[in-house]
Length: 102
Image (cartoon, rainbow, N blue to C red; front, side):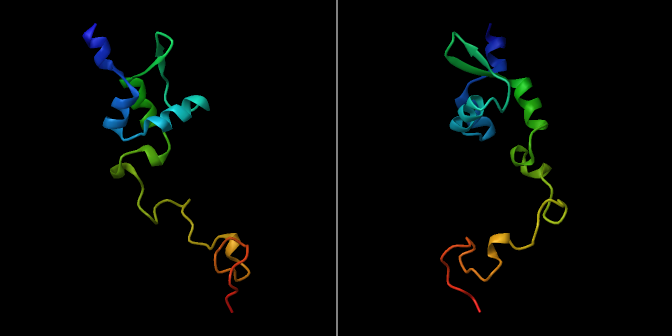
């Protein structure tokens, strides 16, 4: 039974080992997103380590280790164009009551 427990991770263990906040995990479960999980005894949440690591490997870039992330300039999704709200000379970039730049 000890080997089965070693393969299961609690929210706290995920937070400590992978740096994903327990509240983030809870939010993902509420929205039916995130890694697959098990409920033990109806209340305890556990993550299978192998499934969790497979989910991370297929997850968005922000969850991957820094070494696997693309460098600026390599990812064409990163845009240097100004935000549309900044057009029209709004200093605060919100399109609201900013000081007009001339």
